[in-house]
Image (cartoon, rainbow, N blue to C red; front, side, top):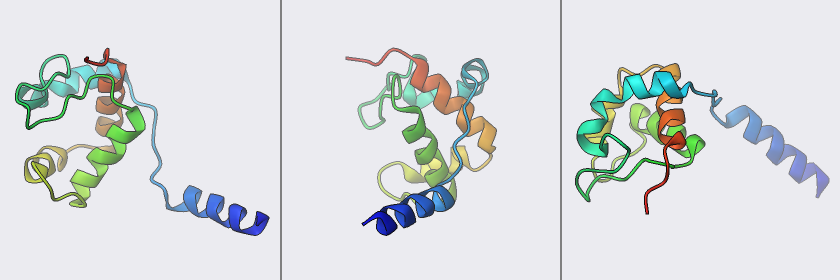
Length: 106
């Protein structure tokens, strides 16, 4: 059992993308194009878009990387692919940190 757990841990470290700690202030300044759909405070302007305020930072980062790589295809994936295509890893980390720092909506 220990061998299986050790192998699983090793694989998760090797295969998982490296998530950097983002800069909230930089993320806020980079969020200008996100506001059109996700709102100024992370509250979506239309119910077809998700609220981002208070979302888990790692989840947001992984999701943006998946859109950028074309690994997501449902819903508004084409729109997100277009927006994330020019983002650097640092941009993605900063945006994820910013939206995660916002007060979750009720």
